[in-house]
Image (cartoon, rainbow, N blue to C red; front, side, top):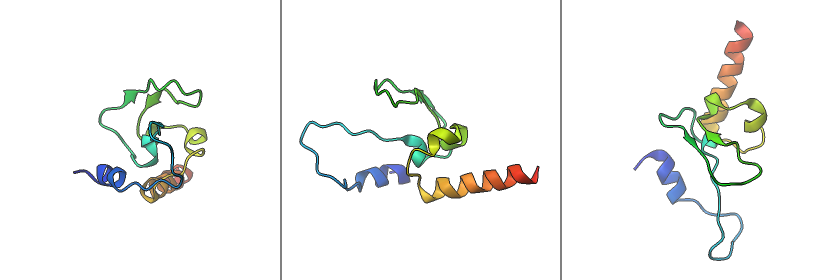
Length: 85
């Protein structure tokens, strides 16, 4: 089982929702890069449409979500490297 799957398996919601309610998952919050990006068809007005790793997502989109510590560290490294150029 991959680490992201074990994270999902151990997910504990902060709110109890009624049976049948749907929940969403923002993959770039835990994935820096994805070998198989995909088109999302959830229909939400907030949907970004094309799901890819955080490395490919615009900052203004990532700033709307709580990101894993791994993604936060990699974003900081990217910013630091960009400032050195």
